Amino acid sequence: MHILVSNDDGVNAKGIKSLAEAMKEHTDVTIVAPDRNRSGSSSALTLDQPLRCKQLDNGYYSISGTPCDCIHLGSHRLMKSKPDMVIAGINHGANLGDDVFYSGTVAAAMEGRSLGYPAVAISLASRECQHFATAAWAMKQLIIKLQKNPLKSNIILNVNVPDISQGKVKGFKLTRLGCRHRADTIVPATDPRGETVYWIGPPSEPQDIGEGTDFAAVENNYISITPLVVDLTAQDNNKSLQSWIAGI
Image (cartoon, rainbow, N blue to C red; front, side, top):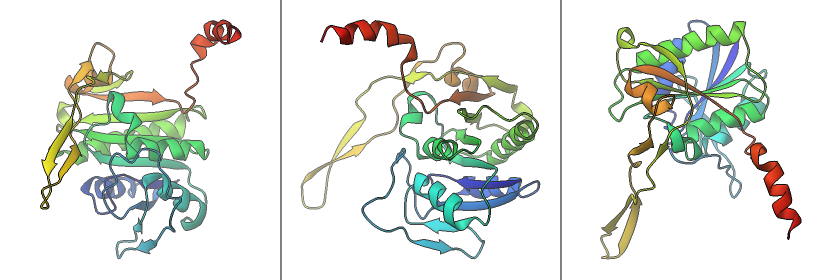
């Protein structure tokens, strides 16, 4: 089995190294990742300049682009054969609820699925990020399952692992996305020239953390698995919108 691995934290991040080392025990792994931290890049592609690729001493490919760039370049040019699966992570921090719309890690997995490959995004859900071994273990369990029981062609798994030792994990839970408060997280500051600048601050606190959400699962020491789809069509509203459009 040949796996293409990427992330949005950068090619030198501890998470991607931990994942690669764990995967190499059972699979053939190719690492193609951004040359720097590209967190929050979502599904961006680099279209205004060429991509530069450098193979590092450890064999990893460092790309001057986004996570989605890495998936395209890795699968179409850098790998000798097409991947059997795309894995994005291990992300430094959670990708819960609304985070999936901004996450470069989740976007890399979605790009892999759009290209026709089974795809998983995996994140270590804390700011401290100490137990990468737990997340690597969780991913190995999922690979074993996926080899025996492949997913439907349109499903991406978004996996969030609590930052605890493996022995404290209570199990795996199928979850839905929760959501965060629509809080103002903009942080104003002053640059050395006295001009006002603004930082996008950290994610706001969760709002929907009820039973069945990814937030609740991680908070209770379960590994959260949320199935995602790329198709954003609001199928349930088609009938009502049809009559609405007819009145235009």
